Length: 134
Image (tube, rainbow, N blue to C red; front, top):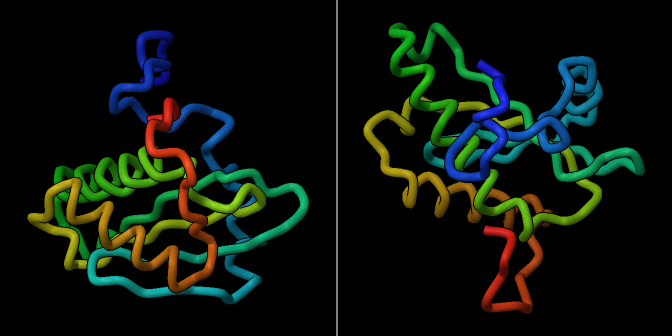
């Protein structure tokens, strides 16, 4: 699943440096800073060792079928991947899917992700219109 062909930047899973280690989840949850959107919830921490990384959580209780859980994970990872250059540099976050993500398109999830990040004050407006990070 993490073969060399998935290191491309065209919808593949988040590369290693942008994926939050499972050992850091407890630190992010300990901060108790959560912000809710229609389709997702983000838990945010801003520490000196943070570096625009994200972890993804999808509950079996909310999404019974594996295909639905996997789609929710893909949508949230893609929203983060396409928007990470707009986030503050020293931030780690956990994205949790809500039932409202079912049936949404990527653009809708990205819009919700941006709104929630703005509310969390971790979004910085990009001064460059032609970003090459995307």
